[in-house]
Length: 405
Image (cartoon, rainbow, N blue to C red; front, top):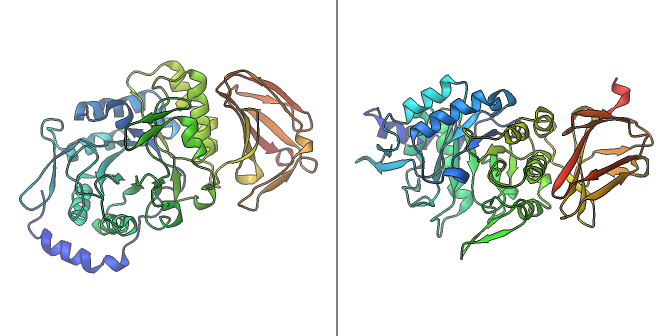
């Protein structure tokens, strides 16, 4: 129930605007969760959200670190006579507060969606002009995460629009992770560190390996297309402020090797791990990919540094990611349609991070080599790596200095 003195409260919040900021300590590592859009679009209701929360727990995803259950577009009803947003009474008859309580009872958190414009991308009421009212409503409902889109925003300044919602969320008094979905149109990585916890770097993802889905005046992009769009962005991200190459399509129709490569590269990029499949009906292979604890540990490493592409040759790419405690992750990505041989003589390579002060000389330090996806230990970096890698697949290794033994 919205309090009768809400308008006085709103005026007070506006007067405190200059002190507003984003909530801290919500995204020290990349957020992990699930979002409705990739699989369900507008075909959503409260039973789906409850069943998904149940599945997140039962599948082991919660134990693996996933915590946000995020309702994307189309949950909205109308605004009431005072301008406060309501839920769709047919899709969510119990109300959003009751649904949030259910999700919280599972040890999870509830996310919601809005838009900086007059309408959302699906034509529902946007938050433009209602930012403080919406923030108060979300806080009263018990919302923990807001995805904030960029449709119907003609003639709006993005920095001003997103800063206004940031301030509104902070003033409402409930810690809410703020995920900007501005598609990278206005280079948010250059200005959003103090505004949001994550910012989208591209348009929407599409469940294919390397394609463009043309929608006329905009496109959706396959995994490799989006991966390539991350070039040059890693220096802007870190704990509390992450580049977001969009939700994952693992389990939505690509091959198992493509899903594994997709999940690996998002983990190497220190990207938010937001699943987009139907958690209630997952194959064992999909569960194994999404809950691989050693790959997730690379994504969630406290150093918070994205991987960089070290080398590319004939469709085979080598990526390095600095980790805490002097460790490294290395991934060989086979973009090609045929199997590739991997031969890597560690001692012939001196690795220098191009953006940060991380480096390694394998002649000076010997590392243990752990194969992440095959879950086995190899010999150390004194021995040349020789392996074969399937088409559209990855090999990923965690390197740990032997001197730490």
